[in-house]
Length: 86
Image 1 (cartoon, helix red, strand yellow):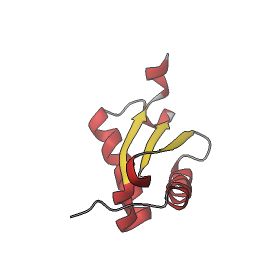
Image 2: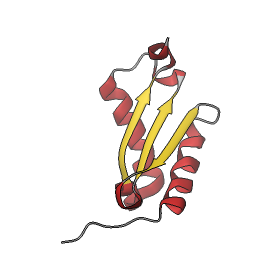
Image 3: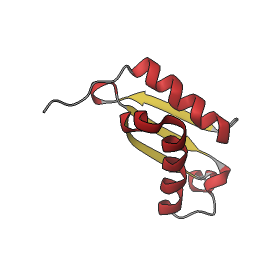
Image 4: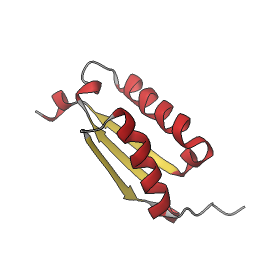
């Protein structure tokens, strides 16, 4: 069984578009991972009062709702609140 390869440029554009709906002015960074997969970082005040588990659930719910099957192309997603960066 071979791992699926993704078109990073296309996937990245879809990930950014999906996240910008919820985080229009926050930091959203997408970098390329193995076989074109997306690595996602979001920094937002919306995460300040959430636990790590809540942040992850929130982020993945957005990705799965907006990208459907293509969400499998996201290797990992990291969410930080702005209060963690002080």
